[in-house]
Structure formats: structure tokens, C-alpha cells
Amino acid sequence: MPENINNRQIFTLKEVALSIQNTIANRYKATFWVKAEMNKLNHYPHSGHCYPDLLYKEDGKITAQMKSIIWKMDFYQIGQRFKKITGENLHDGINILFLGSLIFDPNHGLTIRIHDIDPSFTLGELEREKNAAILRLNDEGIFNRNRSLPFPLLPKRVAIISVESSKGFADFVKLTESRMSGFKIEYHLFPSLLQGDKSVELMIRQLEKIKKIARHFDVVAIIRGGGGEVGLSSFNNYHLAKTIALFPIPIITGIGHATNLTVSEMVAHTNAITPSQLADLLLERFEYFIHMLRNAAKSIKQTQGTLLNEQQQLSHYNYQIKHLIQRLFEYENRRQADLHNIIRYSMMEYFNLSKSNVSTLANKMQRASNEMLSEKNKNLELAVYQIKNSSSQWLQKSKSILLAQEKTVELLHPVNVLKRGYSITYKHGKVLKDQSSLHHGDEVETLLSNGRFSSTITKVESKEKN
Image 1: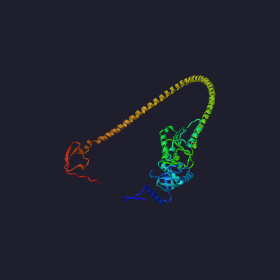
Image 2 (image 1 turned 45 degrees about the horizontal axis):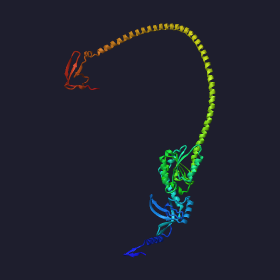
Image 3 (image 1 turned 60 degrees about the vertical axis):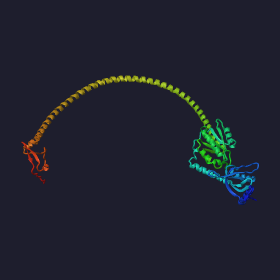
Image 4 (image 1 turned 135 degrees about the horizontal axis):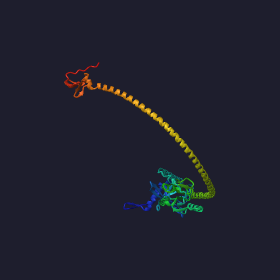
């Protein structure tokens, strides 16, 4: 009971704690479902109990935190069912939907007891995060960026992101080293966690390291040794998938599962179901290349043998051709000599015959020229006579025409016209052609055949046209 000191009611801490305990017990009698992130599982093997740290985030910020407890028997049953459905043990960093009740202990404070966990909710949350990441990468146009990079012909230098102690990594190394014959795959391990709340950050950090020295590698391999859907949640993370999609060299994956692909596998250049299949993918490229080289070497060797036989045949043909050419050359020399003699004899005969023909032709041309010249002289004399006769007649006719024209011109001369009684009247030195330019009082000058006189206009009459 509280004490009353100086009119003040004073409670002990125990009394306050017990009051809170009773209030919570009376208020929260039934169990209820709660969704939260299990940040830390905090399982203690010696007792079998778990003390998970629970938190709730909004827009990436923690808005609530509480402690919880899973008793040993509950943890066993919950764990068995969770693993059966998800293929994974309960672990840190997953979203859960649990059935809980409130417990308040005066010594340990407020705690939520977890009675059950719904595994299907965890799987649903993972699927939701996966779909959101796929949609975002597609909206940014980078989903197929890494897949579009050219794959190297022989990926000899491999940067590996894995857990050094994982079985998947050990299988990959064992298989590649046991099957390497005539070639060698060089790899360098960049160790990283592949699941849990720190795995995404560590994998991105290792990818950034590789990116700085990417020129030293042909591909990057992400290798994981199997696990259930919950353990693959890191590979559905948007930030990890974006780093893979934008990586400057091809990224290949073998993360050990045969169900739905993770987002990281979707955006990676090439993916395999297991690390062993990933090793097969690389080894087959080398083995196929070696097979092609051996076939090429065999083909080259066969070609060399064929070329040698052909070379021997060519040498034999060369000898035969040289011998044949020599015989042809000798035959051609003889034929040329005979032809030269024939041509020489023929030319002499042709020259003698041509000489006689030229003399005869010259005589004929001389006679023809003389005859033609005589005929042309006669024609020329006739033409001269005709020209002289025609010219005399034409000149006589032209003289008669000129005399007639001269008489006509003389009759039309102004002096002769004036003698026939006509006169010319001027006004201001210009000849008057009609009365339209005359006015009363104008002075004019009239020219006659034997003199001129001046007049003043007193009257102007116009002659009307009929």
C-alpha cells in the first residue's frame, strides 16, 4: 500500500511495476497477430529459448522497437514448420507475422511472447519485394543492361563472390580444377555473406571493389551453396540487382536453387541452377574451344599433306611444261626463219611487179592529164566568151534604166516643180503642209521659181472633206 508522507501519496517501484503488470494482464488477456521485422533472433542453445529484437520501419526509419521471447518448446515447433514451408531456418532480418501476447515482469519489463509465426506471410513479403524491384528496374530501363554485354570467348579470369567455407564455392573450385586440361581458369575470391541483414551491403561493397579493377577480370561469378526461398531474399534486393544490372562486365550466378529465379539472377548475364552447373557452363566453353582447336590442327595437318602432294605434282608439271616450252620455242624459231625467207622472196617479186605497174600507170596518168587539161582550156575559153557577151548586154540595159531614172528625178526636183507654177510656203523656216498650224496674224514666206515674198495671214479657211 502507498505511504502518506507530508500529504503526498508515495508508491514503491515494486508497487508501480505490479500495478502495470495487473493493468496489462487485465487489458491484454487474448493473443493478437502482429507484423514486424525480426532484426535479431538471439537464440541461446544452452537454454533453447529465443529473445528476438523486433522493430517496425516506415519510409526506412525505425518507428517502434520491442523485445520478445519464444520459449523453447514454441521455438522448436515454430522452427520446424517454418523450415518445412520456406526451406530455411528462422534467421535475422526477415519480416514475420506472429501470434503474440503481452507480458510485463517487474524485473525484466515489457515483453511480447511469440506463440506462433505464419511462414506464408514471410514468403508473401519476399514476393512483394521481388515484384517491386523488377518493376523499378524495368521503369529505369536497366533490367537487361548486363545481359546485353558481349560474353568473352574464353572467360579465363573470374572474380568470385561467395563465402569461402561454403560448399557451393568448394564444388565450383573442385570441378574446375579437376577438369582443366590444357587450360587454366584463374579466379580470385571476394568473400561476402550471401544471406542475412548484412549480406546485401557486403555483396555491393565487393562488387564495387571488383569494378575498380574490372580490366583484370573477364566475368564475375556469384556462388551460393543452396537454401530455401527466405535465404534468397537478399538476391531480390533492388539495390543489389541494380548494381549487377549496371556492372561493366558480365555477371554469372549459381546460387543453388531450382525454383523461381531471383531478381539478381534475372538481371545477371547468365545464370545456372547450381555452382556445379555454373562451372560446367565455363568449362564447356573451354572444352569446345579446345575441341575446335584440335579439329583445326588436324585439318591443318591434313591440308599440309595434301599441299605436299600437290607441290610434288606441281614440280613434275613444271618440268614437263619447261620441256614442252623449250620444244615449242625451237619449233617457233624454225618456223620464223622459214617465214622470213618466204616474206623476203615475196617482197622482191612484189617490188619488181609494182615497179613495172607504176611505170605503166604513170604513162596512163600523163596522157589522161593532158587530155583533161585540153578539155578544161576549151571550156574556160567558152566561159570567158559567154561572160564577156553577157556583161556587155547587162551593162547596156542598166545604162538605159539609169538614164530613165535620171530624167524622172530631174522632173521631180523642187526647182523644176516650181517652174511648173507651184510654190512652197514656210512658217518660221518650216514647210507648211496644211492650214491647221496657221492663225490670224501669222507671217509666212512663199518661195517661187524666180523669187520669194512674205505675207500676213488675215483669214484661214479649211476645206471640208467629202
